Image 1 (spheres, rainbow, N blue to C red):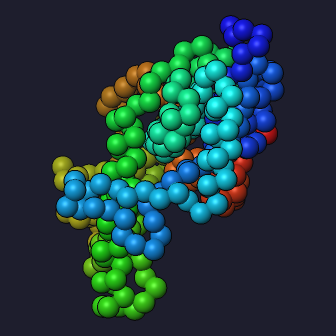
Image 2: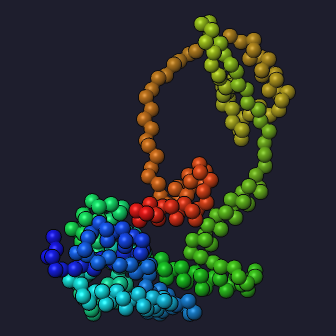
Image 3: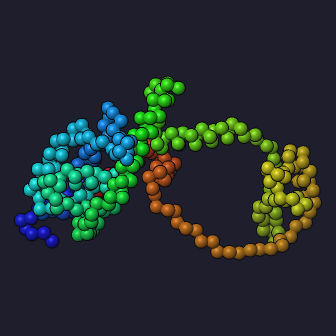
Length: 295
């Protein structure tokens, strides 16, 4: 618990989230928002020193100088600063950059992390602060630098060889390659005509069930290896099968345990929302963010 006169500064990313968390924590805490990243690679130049271990050359994002000043002013009057940015690589990097900006003003800085904005989750996180995870920070920095290298080095090549305006990316270029390879496979595919034979079989007890012909004279039917090639051949087999009497050789019973679906990740959430609800990805992400922020 904090002293009555003490005040802790909690920094999150979203203003809407700040309002929700402020209601949970009460007046012994001041909750404010950074509104995302405060620094990033420059937009007008490469911004990566390849000769110095791929060191990023960060600059203050346009419009964020005012926010940084506000954070410093609030940190100066706070007993402690708690960085409650999102629980992922981006959030960890944002916390790291904010900490670097505030350390000259207030060096009592801790990281808190919660997966949901509920009273129990937030209070538990506040009671269990930790250090900033530099491995996460480095992972985010590596991703950002890779994005910049691929985008800046490959995009101009596309402009020269295809046309201006095309962009290359660490993820999008690989995804495009996979799509093109799949399309080539589709173009090369040669369709094969084959027939299957299904039968509705009736027992002496007048019970019926569906069956399918799976082999002929010991040869397993397979569209690529051994199959019924045309309608005439299928008709010949049908006529022969109708003359036969069949018996059940074996009945197997077994219990099958089916695991429940895995919890949603971003991609599966978007896929299911599109398939079941016909909602586009942008709206899905807005709804998910609002749910996370408790709006």
